[in-house]
Amino acid sequence: MNDRRAFFRGLAGAAREAARPEEEARPEEARRPEGTARADEDARAGAWLDRYSRQLVLPEWSEAAQRAVGEASVLVVGAGALGSPVATYLAGAGVGRLGVVDEGDVELSNLHRQHLHFTPDVGVPKARSAAAKLSFLNPEVVVEPYQARFNHTMVEAQDLVVDCTDSFETRYAVNAACCAAGVPLVEGGVTGLNGIVMPIRPQQTACYRCAFPQPPPPDARPSCAEAGVLGPAAGVVGSLQALEALKLLAGLPALTDAFLQIDLALLDFLRVAVRRRDDCPDCSLRNL
Ligand SMILES: [Zn+2]
Image (cartoon, rainbow, N blue to C red; front, top):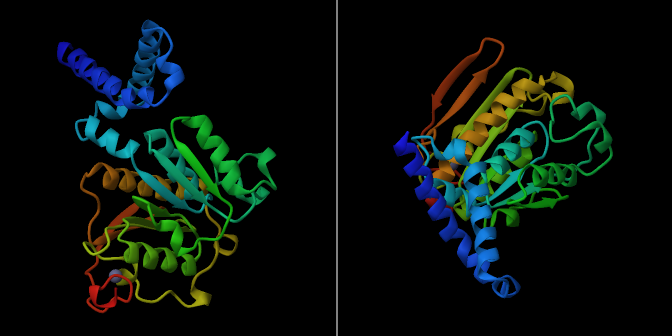
């Protein structure tokens, strides 16, 4: 118990130190009585500690991991069935800056699986609807909504991208952009009761195109509207994407040179090994 108290005391001190530069950047704050400023600083440090306490106590986590997550910029491409759990967990975990890309509007048929959007949001741009909920969840996170189609310039200056789209064209475009920019990526997809998750560290691990050199033919890739999808199935896949994203940001071991194939009808999880391809048009050094 004493060890636990000492652990939290140490973290509180570290959190105060981290809050100080921000304090110094506000001259109007500096003019306030010293005791008041100090009390505000202590309150902020206490809130930081309280908000992240359940992940800070994890043996796998650390203050350094929390700081790394807090300083990271992450782009979530798609604010739908996968983007909802991904963005929710990343905002909750304290990612510093979270971009949310989606060009679509909320539709009634989205609501059973896209939990960032509610019935009154029907007709509202998904990026804006998602950003509003995420800011409520964690006001410390800078949330940037982009009501736009994905383009490769969006991955620049990102520390990580999570692809939550349901389009093969976009998936390959995101993979190519991340490989070219050297930005880590967590790919994911779900249809019916099947899904995949694949973390990618460009030039270090196999990329999405190494695993799937060609997209399936159009008649072999039904959309969610055609094949259907259950909300919790998308929730499982999106949660695993968020988990792998946090591991990559925190420097913890993530799934490497493999994708996870998920069969939620049978609750079967299969790791499929993937080798980097020397001739990969996206990640091979010969092609970059
Ligand atoms: Zn590749």
